[in-house]
Image (cartoon, rainbow, N blue to C red):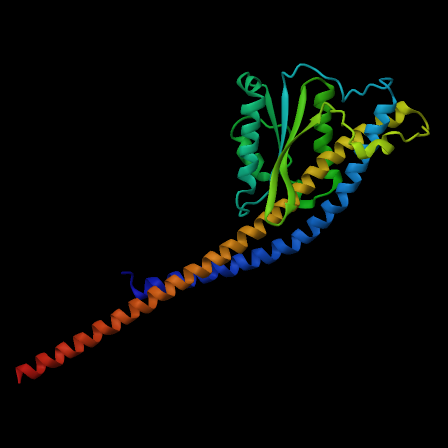
Length: 296
């Protein structure tokens, strides 16, 4: 049985840890609110932009061919993995690693065997993990320090440039999609080449919109496509940011509960140890008194 001093030290240590996890939960909750507001505002814009782009490209009847829609034999692949800069978020980051590994195993096994899979890591955890396994495209460990469209735009432009130059035949994003505080879903979405969206049945009216093009179809489409690609990556980063804070809030809440349960167990052990020590002292006193009486 542990000594009273050891148990007391453990109780103090667990109480300190519990205070830290409570504080981290509160900080994550505050950041989650802002991150959730950002992604909820971003989703309608991204969806509407994609819808307009789909309508425009559908009305061009093949007249306008974008350099970002060129289909090539998939030999070189770029995977953009979006994680966080910090840990203590449960399985948030490890799920991205598993998602990337599963994607390579199921879809790009031949390219990986030939050494033709390149990684772009957004977030320090992805940079540390994939940096040990091969060279990375760019360094984007600073993105979440001051998250904005401009910081993400640079990463999107580097991926787009690689596709235009033929260094990559396919570009895929892997990230956590935010559903709610307790639920994040791993998504693997193709960024390049462009995949024509299939219109839903309730979008029939939208698809038949008669646009007036000014200055021209070509200029509008060629301007919207790069903007849409950058918005898609920015949306993925915002989804990941909200998911990170939700995962950390959940993890810290669970850690606080576990610390409380451990404190109950330690206090029970402390009381039992203290009671045993008192009982031992009483027995020693009684035994000494009886020995003294017998010696008389």
